[in-house]
Length: 351
Image 1 (cartoon, rainbow, N blue to C red):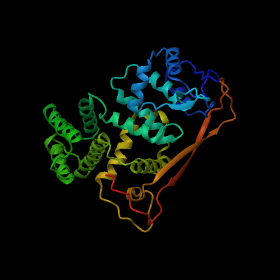
Image 2: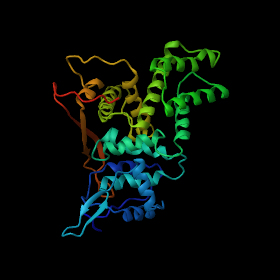
Image 3: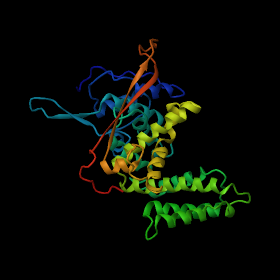
Image 4: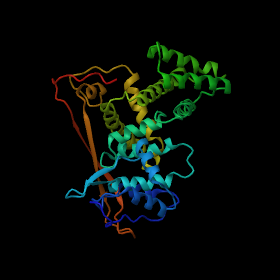
């Protein structure tokens, strides 16, 4: 409940930020809600001045969730506030904010919490707003942010180095598609154009094997299509949930071979990684609705409008930290998928 009791006491800001990240994930200590004024006070205490207007803006951008309303009882109205999980997120955001050139960078934090740790920290509606912000679809700088994003995608293609003039041409062409759509062209026609624009034969003397750069072009195409549809809100909830399940399925096998990455390593690319997975479901050939009906098939999720409920419980060490907390030594994730049963009425197309 609302009140001044049970305050959250945070340590001073560490140099590497590791304690801040894991503090977000610590078990909830209180069921109360924190008001907007209390969030501002917490930021001020950490040397990161904030304002009520900043909180309102961050809610719209998806960095924070909408406040929950709590009744005061006996006809005294309601008061809005945020649960402890969002207060912890707020602290991490305000500490990471100084020095950032683009607000979209902060969007990786709530998206990473939802993608890797589940719905107890961030809900899907907030993730959708954060992804739209990251894709440059929520403000007047949307075109500029989209242009920066597509260049980042292109620059990540190994073995392809564009001259300044061609780089500008590629950027103009790609951002136009992201912002305005394909127009009268089909996805296959755009794929052909993309391969022509980025052909190593026209960008550098020594060309890598064709299958290498064409594969990267396919990845770029998936990201561009995802960004375009995220900006316009065309991506269904079911695809977000499918992407999360696939991400965990893929990382489980990968981690067994090369070791699991830390959360610090996962945060910076959370939005890009989620968009990539969503984009692959939009651009790759559709998998058949096989009898096995694997949950790794996005068509199953769209057909039945499936929802993934993901939670986790920490494996806690017996060691006691100076703060009185027990360090987390591991995570146990649980996925629970619900949706329409087989044979039920078919939902409308969602992308």
